[in-house]
Image (cartoon, rainbow, N blue to C red; front, top):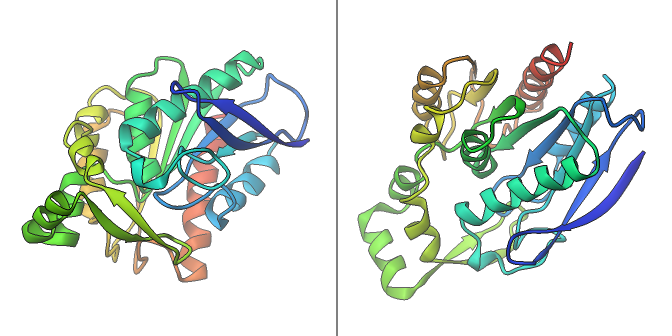
Length: 254
């Protein structure tokens, strides 16, 4: 059973997701998938994870954040705080449908979103992270430098290329918001089984961030994919990453 469903965030914006339940049974585990920044729910990471999980009778719900994909909102207004609210509402939506065992998977921007969401939840059963951002402020400083950040502040927005190569704008409110959303602080509150997979050639999010996060989380497995960049452009790296993540989730469902 695969359904396109809609739910609302706290602001009343309509968000779109794909629910895939291979058995139709609400008692099977379900994984909520949090996408990367400027990505969408139909990208290979999420469809590949869906396939691997569904083959093992684990349901999945991949959805578009506010301002992404088929969901309402403007990308330029998106923030980490907004994404966390979206994720919380996705979990609430599934609970209201009768799902009992819910886990989280997040990639990059969706990774810090999942970290913070998990830190605010007390009934998730697993957390899986693909090259997550833990310290977004440092990532933006590395990419833009202090001069670039100041230009962003003065202009009010920055030009941003989406994962599909579409030019977008991102408001300075994004940078102001990330100062209040630190993955390391969130990690201190996470007690559920967690896996982090990160490439050691990541050019966007330094692998050191995941090493530090893995040290903080009490029950965390860290897997480093040698030679892999942020987007796992090498098919072998991509397959290894998604297999590590899905195998870990599957092992926690038994």
